[in-house]
Image (cartoon, rainbow, N blue to C red; front, side):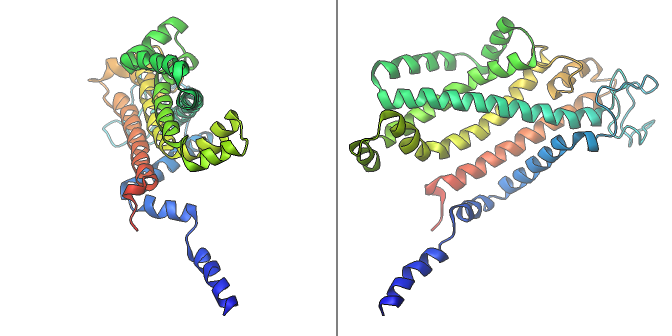
Amino acid sequence: MSNEATAMPAKAAAARPGALAEFWHYYSMNRGAVLGLIVFALLVLVAVFAPLIAPHAPNEQYRDALLTPPMWWANGTSNFILGTDAVGRDILSRLIFGARYSLFIGVVVVTFALTSGIILGLLAGYFRGWVDTVIMRVMDIILAFPSLLLALVLVAILGPGLFNAMLAIAVVLQPHFARLTRAAVMAEKNREYVVSARVAGAGNSRLMLVTILPNCLAPLIVQATMSFSNAILEAAALGFLGMGAQPPTPEWGTMLAAAREFILRAPWVVTFPGLAILITVLAINLIGDGLRDAFDPKLKRS
């Protein structure tokens, strides 16, 4: 009897799905999120294998094929499936290599904004007092400005360029992580497990980084996903205004800026980079919705 009684909890624990399996169960219930994940995975593969997939070099110019329409239009050719731009560069190849820049921008911006936002939010939420006041007032000042306008001002001060644009966007997105971390830390720091760790002799650094922070990650992951799409959008906007990536970089916003004077004569030059931005941002936002549903215990079904 005792052996059977001991075996029952073990069987129950084995039957209980793992954390990853449970997460995927709730995530997969959102069909749009699964579709967004598939599209994003394809985008990553395209970016990684761009030199093998692209039919031409992104900056190679074909002077005898200026503004060639897509292959299914009149006068189109299969050599340039999506046509060429005003200087004879293959649009499809530039879009494929542009995926690399979009993912790079998203990763760098989110990493910087997430790291700095978590540090500031931990300090503000844990210590409170004047530390909280100073940090949060600075964050409020940043949030008081329209994000794109503030990023544009920062890039104008730092100088045009992809790196400066990413830095400016990260500064603009940072307050969202700081405020979210602060709220989560304030909700967790007085719970029993934190008090027990403090009584056991854990220092402030260990309490913040090891005890409290892991329990605050779920909303931060969702916010990071949303900020990823915002970073791509704002980088494209800065590129369109000539303050982000500079020609001949095959960045989607820069491609739009170079093609705006041909909207009526050659609409495909503008349409395809715009669609690439739309599809990418939509896929990432759908992933964010799925992550929110999977992480929110109120939305989980028993």
